[in-house]
Length: 194
Image (cartoon, rainbow, N blue to C red):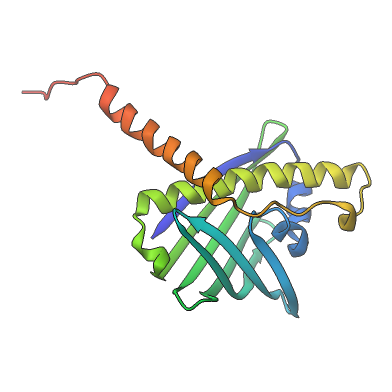
């Protein structure tokens, strides 16, 4: 399934692009993510934990940067992993593209996500909403981390992103779904042209 998100940060494109060169810094911004080993050649081992409803999934796997286009400010990451309790697998091809907007940067993210097992039982809407919540948290964490770097704070003195709380994500995702339904329900009636 293809999931698209976009967000803005109040930093220049060049500064955000330089930040994307430091994968451990980027991973520290994603709730529930942890890098466990640098394999070299832009490849990493890591873990991602997320709670979807009553199910907590913790995937261990690898991620590799497949493409880094400096001129186009575009990065492609290929990641795959398996749930540590054997309840499923995930594979994702993530493409992020940076573009200037005002005094900041707009980041467009496309995730081609393949799930099997426990995570696959959730509908596209729920998975998309959870992903949107995580991307918003990532954007906030990235903005804060870049600002801390600008102030001279060392990376080992910065907190990593808090784990992805199942309850908080669930409430925020449910609120998004409710707003989507309300928009459909309350859109003014538009008669069909005869």
